[in-house]
Amino acid sequence: MTLAIILVVAAALALVFILSITVSRSLQVSNTSLAGRIQPLDLEAFRNLTDAAEDEYLRRHLRPADFRRVRRERLRA
Image (cartoon, rainbow, N blue to C red):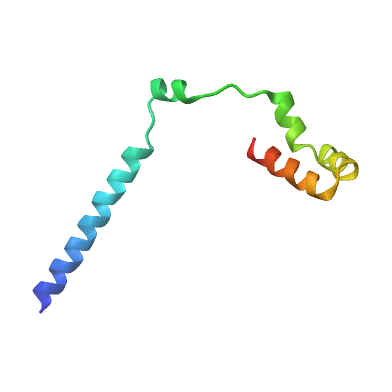
């Protein structure tokens, strides 16, 4: 009985060890692959999308249904 418990614990520890190695290797990114994945960001457009004053302006000047549609589109951008 003791041998079975020791084997189960050893197997569980081995599984945790293997999974931790797998996860840490998948999170490592080389500089060359990272450079290919970076996309330029239009900072002015980003600031416009995150501006609370712009949201308030749209809320005041659009019908509620139109505002919700525009807000969803802005959040997806």
